[in-house]
Amino acid sequence: MRELMIEPQQGLAFELRAGEKLKVIDVEGGQVADLLAFRRDDPQERLSTGATIDNNGSLYLRPGDRLYSNRYNPLLRLVEDTVGAHDLIHPPCSPEMYRCQYGIEGDHPSCYDNFAAALREYGLPAILITTPFNIFMNTRVYADGRVEVKEPLSGPGDYIVLEALCDLIVALTACSVAESACNAYRCTAIGVEIWK
Image (cartoon, rainbow, N blue to C red; front, top):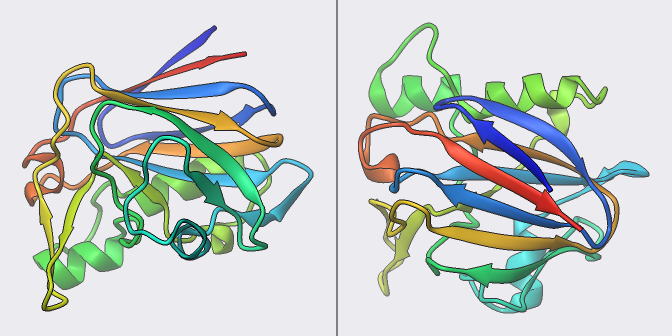
């Protein structure tokens, strides 16, 4: 087993082989983890939250559901989930989002920048960053079409387990938003376990 820790407002990338399981753990509770996945042999094929919603017929994933690529191939299977509330529609937080939504100019940690730095180690350009699977993000969609991000339902030690269905490069961040309910108004660490 490999064990990793993503510090608050940080990110990393790693290889996940077919058949390996990835456990993403909310260490203290109330913390979102953004996830991107790319085929190891062809990174142009990457996680598509749109194809994932389309193929599962739902905005919400349940154990047994798969996360699909932009070519409609399954990349990951959701094996276990102690929370049941995650997000497939929001982009990663970025300098532009902080400027637009919070009036923050200048440096602010962001999932976009953390993804870009982590993927650079694998020679992948930032243009490949798309909408991530936002683990533990509690997005509510109402009948009138309104969308609201509420505090995560995850408590300390809650987790999900994903199984790789092909060889992948995975990028994962501990979301950087401390300005809203997204991370319960604070940023904490995310734990990672990988095993065959």
